[in-house]
Length: 156
Image (cartoon, rainbow, N blue to C red; front, side, top):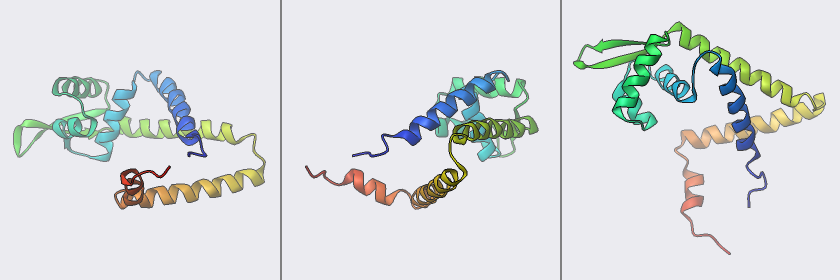
């Protein structure tokens, strides 16, 4: 039984909605933000690499890359090893966008915590950090414990 009722997921979803709404003012949609994120995390990635990460088709990837290049978020260069391939790099404008997104999220979370006393905030942040560190450790290990739970037969 999930005692959290997936509240962390639900809060994150609402923050994402607000962030997306705020970033639309810059003319970007969620698919473009995801694309930029992949390129920022993988400088020099090819469009084939982006397609693999995002699970999008070749045409959509090419259109999105061209659109983001036109908007000044990406630079496409020839791959020196394969003249048919293009390497993608994020621009300073894309890097500033990350800061903008982080600032929007931080403001939302600050607003959310305003109803807590200083002591409540301290306890909450401490517990949240413990959860995050446990999650990160599990992720870095390849999710062995959570996978095992999903693979094990359920007891009634």
